Image (cartoon, helix red, strand yellow):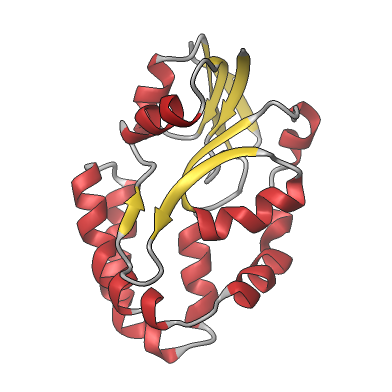
Length: 190
């Protein structure tokens, strides 16, 4: 089956979901402030493409194990976050959206679940975190995206892949056509 596959952050969503979610909490919970210096370093390394999968796991570990695990039920906060941020879904996507689309994102599934439901997207995968331990169960990032995509969508062939970043080179390599998305400008690069 031929499908269109999309990255989410900075491709369909105008921003980095996890960064926006952390900023959402910064205004509401002072306990998150102690993690800000490390989170800023993580964001800079990510922006400069200085991450490996192992680096990402290590970098987010203290935040996830320290803050996320102790945050309690955040489902209401996730709904409120998307009430405020759903407007950041780029308009070009609704014009090309198909029911067979697959979203493959580094964003955590607890954040993706709500927005995918709102957008009517049935096929998606993101990073997954064990709520009890704060450890990654699945990190959908860099070359792991291809591995996870093939495991969860066997037989799917990527006709068109849309991304904002060369971090997705591994996904680009298995797609027939690749489109680089910068804000609302889409450029075919393969």
